[in-house]
Image 1 (cartoon, rainbow, N blue to C red):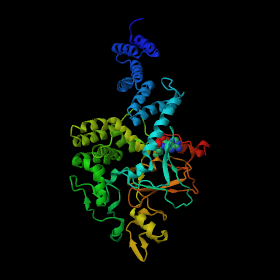
Image 2 (cartoon, rainbow, N blue to C red):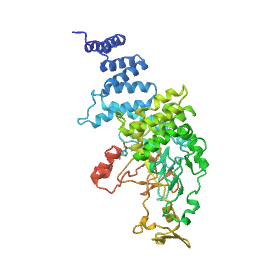
Image 3 (spheres, rainbow, N blue to C red):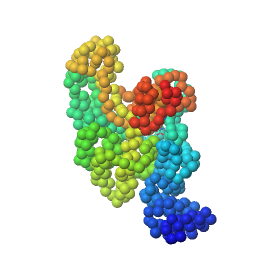
Image 4 (cartoon, protein in one colour):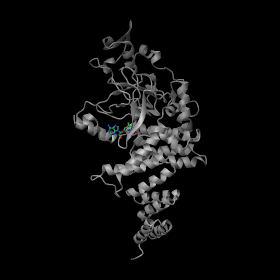
Length: 507
Ligand SMILES: C[S@@+](CC[C@H](N)C(=O)[O-])C[C@H]1O[C@@H](n2cnc3c(N)ncnc32)[C@H](O)[C@@H]1O
């Protein structure tokens, strides 16, 4: 036998089977010396180190094997097990899901190395149960700084299985249709990019509340409905940017504390990102920038670990495959890199920067937003008027009757067709810790209601009675579409095949 890397590896494997770990490692060393791309020897040496409890070496070897051949499931498994030893559970989970997804997406249900899929599923279950019970205990959520009063006691978040992930369950019987089940502010939200430089329309940069509307269709009288919007935004950021406007001192302070304080000094670079998002009609890059700033603030100011700081975001399901960024995503990521490079200047910041501001993170956050975030559309002022003060009968072509007063609305005809309510445009996007944990069903038992004023959202029952312990489900799409259309939309937008009762019966 020639001294090829394969033969040394095989000798190593023989020693390994005899539990002679040092001799096994020596032979794997020789194999790697001959062929530095021998990912199998790296993987096997990783296992030998693991058995010797040399977890750092085990981690490095499995990482190297993945670098050489990312399709080698055994290396992902070894990497996952080593990460678990360091309590890096989110990353460990990600590696397990790479194997899990490859298995279920393959035509013949195989892993590349015939790893027992039941073992992988069991590992996923263990880690998920542990993480979810820790992260979604009521106390932790109630204490969360980013989302105060985010959950009331009607619901809890629980893990279902590796495929469905977590979802939301009732902790009480519900018999009243009008009873709000859960009301929540988002972990992060942002205005749609079309509004960023709109002279006619301003919203609070933090909570998206309408501040000033100057559309010709609204008469002077209507604009004077003071309680519906604030005429003169007096809460503009006065530190550096002088650009962001808020509806209140509270929002100004919250924005500063959570994310704006970190990046405000680099506003010239942020404006470039805004410009890009406006042209491309995108909002995710702006949310990703805020998410990164929130994470960094938690690490720096609240002295939390990086994993804990990331966990409100990484606890969602997302695409764990190899990151491939589109050209637009690469450009947006480059803007984001510039912004954080200019604000993370201390020596200590270098580690955070290197671990956080990466292409992989951009892909991860983008996928978290794509699969989990909600459009936010606080009800328009016109609808607010109609909703609260007038009946549809009071709406005439050019006026609305509010009490005894008739308010002229110059071009209301543009908005009202056959007495329908005006179309409300999407104002922004938000990521909700609990509401976005609710799984989909084509036969939903709850629905989501936008706040009239800001980015908060409330869940109400759509069917009663609902029983304690029952899962609540919303519909992510129009559930009245035909079966094939629903399946197509859910696959394209949320990457899953719906298996609700209605879909199982192909109704
Ligand atoms: C908004 S999240 C819901 C929370 C999610 N289960 C989690 O653990 O983060 C949407 C994701 O949940 C999963 N999901 C939701 N409803 C589902 C369903 N009916 N069937 C299969 N997967 C579903 C899909 O992976 C989808 O991309």
